[in-house]
Picture: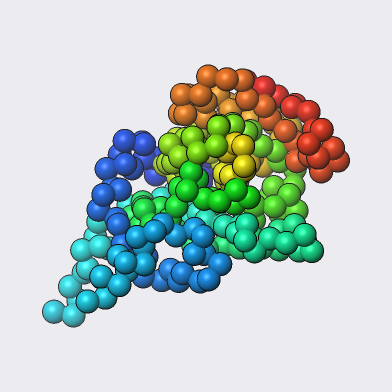
Length: 55
Length: 188
């Protein structure tokens, strides 16, 4: 964390600003591994989108 | 030109804090297992882009099975009472009918990572608990005794979620001693 002594934070982003980035970040992070205990967490089409990306 | 920067780096938006998602998988839970033994960190992010790249590929609370717990805590803070930073803290909780918490969960995450809380430095993280009858979202904070900071967080959170019912703040210490009998120390 880079809070200064007054606790003032520099990087504030509004909800509307953050939402504008949603559509352009659809691929799973490269370094994310879907282990067996995470299958309950991943959305249904994630495995398909990952295999598409490898072609 | 080997030195050519990648576009993804040039357009990255860093967050004030790094955050870690933790998942507690209900299918891995058993009566023999100690509480907390199946919870584990799954991904740490520090940019807006990294957040969305994971969030867009995971199930949202309405699609998780009953018993699932999904956490987003500041990096290096474990979502456990025993964590030294959480130990003297507490939590605000909002409840929703089963399957109705998706938007509020997202808005909670965006308010935290976008540092929209005046007392954001008091926040440890948030958790959504998916249960058979209801979904619960809690924000964990560091210094439960700091009443003004907790009330500020509670009031702002309700505003961000457009949540109109009264919410309660429980000290972790009380929850440890009284389990579900713990009483709200603050309400707003």
